[in-house]
Length: 512
Image (cartoon, rainbow, N blue to C red):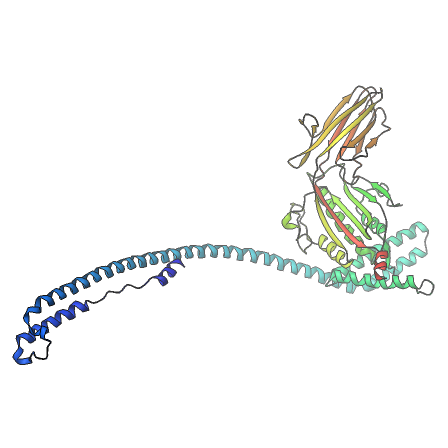
């Protein structure tokens, strides 16, 4: 734009013809010709000064001055033309240079555009292929559901008749088989619906209507055609049964709230239990997908830890049912946080396992149907300082201080006073067995007491400040006349999903 602006502001230079000197010379020639041929023209009409030849010198001087003036004006105009010409040449060179730059940019942008077109076309082909597969799956599920109605009704009728005609143990098996068949049927319903969240919400509204009618008309109300409510702990139990190795360790046969249960895979904290409105099978599917996702990552190489299990918490906070699932695995990247619930998106990049992008999609849709919310938090390690008061069998009491620091994201032990890094653990040896240990944090007033330690035994004790997310482990190796104590900081980096729902009571309170 600068050359164009300069061109607009520039005044055009003009080369003037020497009209003054030319006209003056012609006038002198005519004047002299008339004086020389006075008998022909007559000079009486001329002014008196022009009738005399003596004024020729004055006329010649005037002509010379006019010639000098025209020459001076010519030199000045020529200089202006040369300056203007140089400026034009400069503008032309700048114009060609800008054109070359524009051509270079155009070629660069063209290359980028071609690459972007290739990327978009590849993603579009993948999306089209996935949509075709999803529609194919949906059509198959719809066909199975349509043709399986009669088979489903016959199977359910046979299971109910078998349950009534056998003893209690076999009847329980038939009851569980009927529940599993109903669960499969509800999955087919979800797979064939166009809007999963709306389908789930409609069933909740139906349950809400029957539930409120039953409460308002306790004596005259007709029995509901289906059970409108379910217990959250029962849905969790059903989701755990197919993936747990030992149902007895988790207490799945008789859960009590509050209660804490654990096995090699899970640590479960039941603080409260709540009655929920809706189809229990939808909640079972939600919990199953969250647990399967957590188990997959927690069992991968580099993330396994015998002390950090998949942690599950069920509680009631501020009128909402709060369900948490934590697993020690890779954190969710910043550029993936808005994609993890999208249909077809999967962060599984392992050779043997490629996710289909359905699990968290179902979770998000069911949460929306329950009018709840789901979010996640990337869990990181934290620095802390511990004070250990160790009581030995010989009456001695030792006090040890340890600082847990973070190095390259991992927790490490160092001596609190010297600051010298020790490594992945702190170790102490004593000349007598350990009877009890009191562990306190400088930021916490309530210490953790580990007592009743036996001789000739090895025991492990987890951090109880957060039983679902222990950040350290104490291993006590007692012998007859000596002992060894190990403090192992735990790498707790992982992801915690938190889902919140309105309970049946809170929905009732909100209505009235």
